[in-house]
Image (cartoon, rainbow, N blue to C red):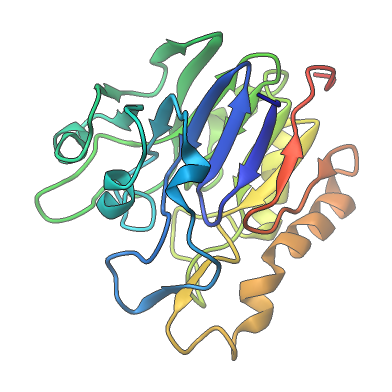
Length: 256
């Protein structure tokens, strides 16, 4: 298995590293919110064959999609914030681990550490997680998946630990609410984290029905806007803008 990561749209990223497959926030097709449309091809289940673990960052519908979890092939382990285990267990065919920020698990040769995320926790009136989370994958290459987050003070503690940072730069509508990074603030995150490579996620995938065409620049341009902001403010970081379905290699030789 080649070490690489594949951006599958929104916050769904497939990380192949050290012979282990980790999938984040799988939204593989249309989601339950009918007014939000997926504007890129659906992810075929066979693309995800051999996935060892699935990480869910928080309970919002564009990150925790039960229909997508049901369609997952095989028997991957699910890793979720405390409070979401019950709902994920309805569709899981293997173990579900609830974690808090700072908790660590080992999957094969990889160590997975839950990282705080500054974002909302509520899925519904009856379902709330204790916190939203990101994930630090430590292995031949260290990959940080930020989930959905705004800037937070302890983000700087990741400096020196991250080779590749997957950072949210947009959303699924004309406006970003609290708890999100726009391209400029995501560029500020690279100053704090100091990765070698940054990859924009959470953009160019979901948008309300009928709004994509009038808001084309916002829908299609967040990745490039992030690249421009990083180039202006933190030129030592390489930015790789991947369109949904595109992959990039993960090389153990990336300098920390």
